[in-house]
Image (cartoon, rainbow, N blue to C red; front, side, top):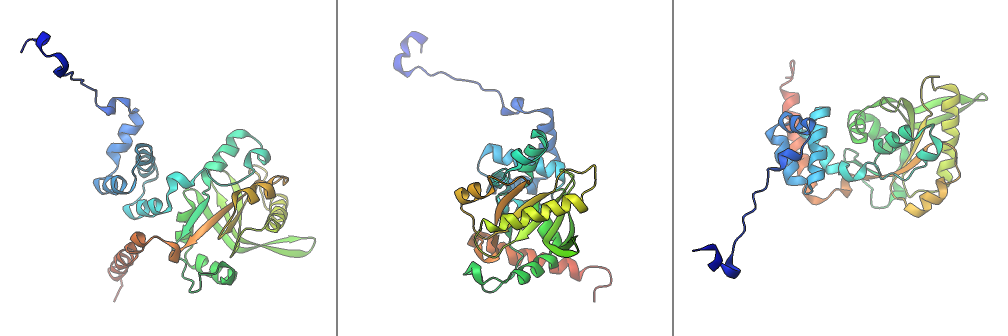
Amino acid sequence: MPSDELGEHEIHLVIRQLPTVELTPEDKKAFLCVGFTHHREILSKAKELNERWYYIRKCATEFWTVLSLKSHLRNDDYRAFGQLPNIFSATLPNEKLAARAVQSFKDEYLLDFVNIEDETDPELIDEPELQVDIINNVRKFIMAFGEGFCWIGSKYRIIVDEEECFVDLQLYSRPLRCLVAIELKRGSFKPAYLGQLNYYLSALDEYVKLPEENPSIGIILCREAKKTKVEFAVRDFNKPMGVATYKLGRNMPEQYKSLIPVVDGIKQILEDNEPGAP
């Protein structure tokens, strides 16, 4: 049919270049470095394009296993990092370090390896019992916090004027080159927690921090925290601190709980096949 006879039925075909031309060489390399199983997990769990590229880049640069990827997807790292209520920009020596600190911590952590029977009322959770579970699962705790964190100890002892004080969980961040003090709280956030943490950070900076290291950072890790309450509470402190929350295994969505027996079964198979296993 001649073109002048098409009228309202005229059809225009638009040929669009493949989206790969929009990718950087680093992104193309990252995509090719990641295995098929990783891509399948990312496609099935991450719905947004930017979110998928976030996990692809992480898998390529940090060499995540499939199990590690699943853990990070459950933790919703893409949305959790950079959302921590904090005063890093006002208390760290430069903007670049403050920005890196913001991106190093999540606003919520999934501690699905913690096994505490009475979780329905946060105030009934025993803090020492919670610490013991974390200590027994140090590797999982470090994985939950992210890449570059190193374990120093629990109930980390500092002496000030011949009196002892103890940081609940003491870590070190290699990317930030600083000590990270974590105070573990069983219930909702209370402003009084910050005074204690501020004191610990002063002691760490004075007696433990090396001259070439950056100022120590403190994190209050509690079950619940209201954003406005936290923002008001941290406003007038002069030490880099933030407040994050955590979820335990019983708080996991049902679709994720079903993965636990599978992971445990794989772990048992690996242990049974270790050299020297009966």
